[in-house]
Structure formats: structure tokens, C-alpha cells
Length: 519
Image 1 (tube, rainbow, N blue to C red):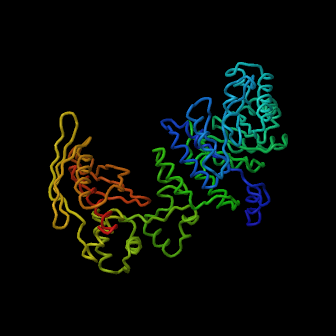
Image 2: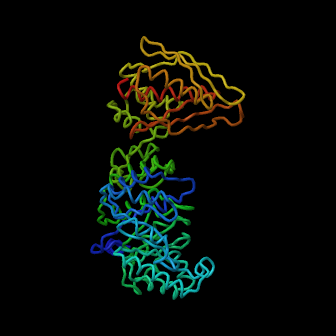
Image 3: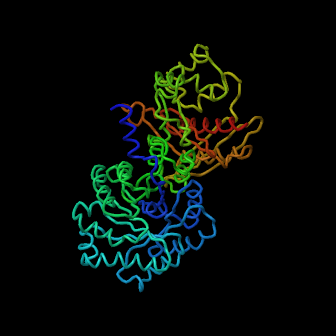
């Protein structure tokens, strides 16, 4: 394919003169259906502020008839002065004028009411157990009733793509019944459609209706983003999704993949601050407790990481060598992993990031290569500690003089530590749910006598067996990840005693934090 024809393809997906994409976020409603996730009222209000500041056009935050907490949300959000418009969610009703659930939607005074209705005859017959004609009247009557109260209305055609595949005439009749809605949103509710099916069906819809077309995709086959792009090829410019792909089963269309694809790769103009995508995603992680895969495109911790020596050497010469885009464009950052594979170039670059200018042939670089090859230094934080010791002659911020741990038959652990900080020695005792936890708590208590460590969080603890043939006598390698504010780092320890390995990783992690912050 030549350059000209490629431009035609990208222009077809993202026409320069196309209507502006309408970004409709449903993290707080559909995303809240994630198994194990529960938002408090304060959570929803706080997240709404972040989503609005980022640039979403609409925030769909709840279904008041199914959750009394959502009624309070709409009472409170009106006074926040958000730039984004509020959307409330509900379903069609056979008697909208007499239905309390419909009345609950009106009382929210939301900017938009989004109602969903059945567009698959299977659901009409087997779930609603009503006639196809009655369902059509229900869709039409509900939308007209809401509009008669001067509300803007969007219609979610639930299971539309499955419904069209089963009975295209009826699926289109449902859209015709909903034609007075401001937007007709085609939903792949089961998330099982393929991109070519989406493109074919959305093309048929674009020819059959004059209303604004939207799409709402689920990710049960991993195709939600691709399916959304396929629908966009047929004028579906109202797009619904969730942050980090939250949602029922396998989740919804993920903004963290869709927005970089459209805004950066396809060059569409979006009224969002793309550079805040990484931080917004991490904020949602903290608010939900649902972590991201490190190899997640664009915003994963490893999305722009490089480990091989050949890769790192090339990247230092030209960043385009092994990256498809600049990580800064989504607020992420480049990471060169330290290992026996990273070579001298990786160590030189890491040293430079810590303020040490060294050449590839510097004796210290060669020494550090040997240390890394022996597995004694495996993380960036450990490299910093070694550089501080070798170049600046810095001593550790503290040292663990002694410790003793005992575990009761009920599993409660108690650790006694003696910590030295300069000329001071601190003695502390702490309990924990296990020996590593009690050691960590005791260390924190001792260090808090001299330093501020409240901001320091342990975010991950991982154990790897080195020599499995030794069974329970095997050497284990412990990795601990830390976070303070927006900074994160990791340290390791190795021993045939898991407590000693954890001790070493903890001590290095705390020392890194204290030395970096002037301790």
C-alpha cells in the first residue's frame, strides 16, 4: 500500500471535517458494575471532578431507581460547577407517567437522561415477556414523556448488534421508535461482535436513520476499542467508555487505549489534556483498588520500558528506534530496566538520571556491570544506593542493628528492632499479620522518631524462587514496590530465609526514599 492510499484509509476512519467526537464517560455507572467494586458518594463526587477536568463531555454517574446513593449524588453534583454535563441512567417504562422510576430520573435535574431499551427480539420475548409491538410503544412513549418535561434524551439500544444479526427489521424498528432521542446509541452489550460485523451493521444504520449515532462497546472478546473505531467509520461520533476499561465481566471500551489511538495515532482533535491520561488512570487505580497490567498499551508501567542492551543503546541514539510514540504525550515515561541484558549503555543512562555523568568505559561502570551480572543489584533504586556510596561516600540514612521476630500459633507476629540513625538508637516493638508485616511496622515506628515516613506506601510484594530443586530450602528473591506521591521505586533481597530477603529489600527501599529526600 502506498502512502497516498494509506492516507485515504486514515482519513476515512478519522475524516478531517467530521463532527467533533462526543466523549460520554460511564465509569461511575457501567464501570461501577465491575465485580468487587463499590463507590461511595464521596468517591463518585471526587472522581466526577477529575473526569470533568480531563475534558469528558458527559459523565453518566448513576441509576437512582436502583441505588439510593445515586439520588444523593445528583443532589450534590449540581453545586460543583463541573464543565462536563451530567447524565442519569434509567430504562424504558410501559407507563412512564405513572412510574416512580421515571419520576426519579426527572427529579435529578440532570443535563441529559439516558434510557435503555431492548432491541433484540430474544430479550423482548424471553426477558420482558411482552409483544414486539408493546416494546416499540414503550420505547417511544418513554422518550416522548421525558422530552415533554424539557429534558434532553439519549437512547441506548441494548443488545443492538446481536438484535440486528438475529432480526434486522425489528432492530431498526426499535431505532425508529426512538428517533426523537437526541442520540441513538448502538450497544454491543454481550461484547461478542467482530469488527467487520460492527462496520457492516453500523453502515446499514447510518443509511437508515438521520439521528446522531453513538456506540457503547463491551470487551468480552478484547475487541471493544477496535469495534468502536469500526463504528466510527460510519459516522458514530458519540462514544461511550470507561477509564481503565472498568465494567461488568470483561469491562467496557477503555478510554486509555481509545483516546491515544484517536487523538495521537489518527490525529483527531480532542478537547482533552492527553498528557494527563496516565495520572488520571493511576488516580482511578487508587480510588478503585483495581490495578493495571504492566504491559497495558500507552499507560502501563512497562509500555515504554526497555531491557535489552541493543534496544537501550539504540534508544539513547534515537528514541524512535524502538518506540511508536513519545510516552510524554500520554503522561507516561520511558524506563530502562537494569539487568545483565541492559549493557553499559543502560547503566550509563540510569546513572545520568541520578545526576552522575559517567562514560561507558568508566571503571565504576565496568564494576557495576559485574555486580549486576552476579545479581547483587537489580533495580534502579539499588543502583542509586551503590552510586551514592561509591561516588559521594554517602552512608545509609539508617542501619538495622538487630531484630528478632516471633510468630504465635495463631499467626500473629511480633518483631523487636533496634535501629541506628547517626548517633541515635531507637528500640521499637510491633505486631503484624505476619513476620514481614510486623518487621515493616516496627521499622516505620523506629524511623518515624527521626524522619517523616507517613507518605511512604508499600504497593506490591512479590516472591520468586531461585533454585526450585531445593524445595523449602530454596533461595527466594523478594521484590518490594514503594510509592511516595507520584514517585515509585522497587528494591530486592535474596536469601534462603524469606524474612531476611524481605528485610534487605525493606531496608534498601527505605534508605532510597530517605537519601533521595535529604535524609
